Length: 325
Ligand code: AMP
Ligand code: MG
Image (cartoon, rainbow, N blue to C red; front, top):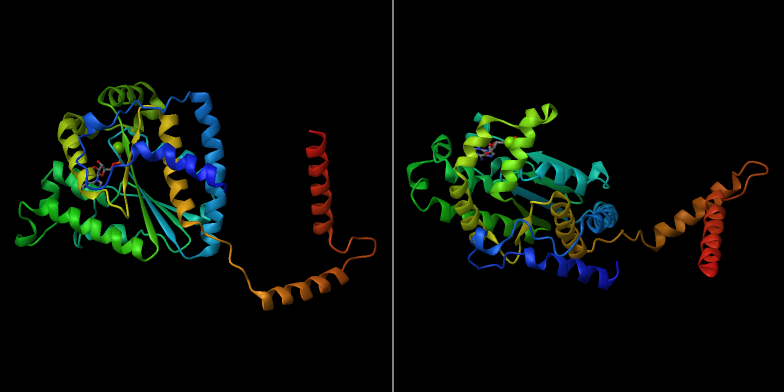
């Protein structure tokens, strides 16, 4: 990874970052149509190289087995969470990723503290966990629809008017604890405009193969647009921290949202800079002894080490091409 490329990625996502301690008003501070002056064709190329960068870093993350990453995706309905996950993670090894979608909590989940079900889905070291919706629903949908809070069976002292402020603090503390222990929390809010949501809903109604994605509840939620904007703004203001900042990703153009999400995740992995473990001198000596043994087993007429031979030929060819080009 060149420093220059790392710096370009950092530069690219800087305008999306919510400065810790700042007071956000979504409609004033973030434009859902922003695209950093990029054209779609350039964007598609960028995403392709971003996806292969992620694949390389994920391989190293798994090999190093020391850090884990949890990427939280929040959005309003039709914000593009599913498509973002599909595209951004398209190049990575499925063995190293676990995706969890959080729906209306079950009876069992409601019988625990509100972070319980999210804690159960945290990554192992070496893994990337993706939260499709996350613990932030606990200060979003639960705040906009207080009947959700009633269902949580909280004791009286935990239900007071300071409940949201307290939850912000608890979430910040929880994320700090995770970060301190090697689990980075990456937070992405896909910021969709009201008009683009209308268009995407219509598409889901017009195309039969999209009908399953649409429910009457989605329209009910849309009627609460302003309440959600306020809840998102308050949440972004209170929970963007130095250890786990929020990124507000412009979501009206799907291709641009995907590049941003890939860049934010890449930036985190570059920061971790996971390394392949060095097996050490003793183990290396043993490997070389084993290699000699395998070489002696070569059948008559076969090369002692076909892999090394092919590798050498490939390198020679590459060098030749470079010389000619
Ligand atoms: P979807 O992601 O479209 O499958 O919908 C999941 C639904 O679960 C959404 O309507 C969310 O608002 C709802 N949901 C997610 N988390 C919670 C929560 N903690 N409490 C209540 N509803 C939730
Ligand atoms: Mg839905």
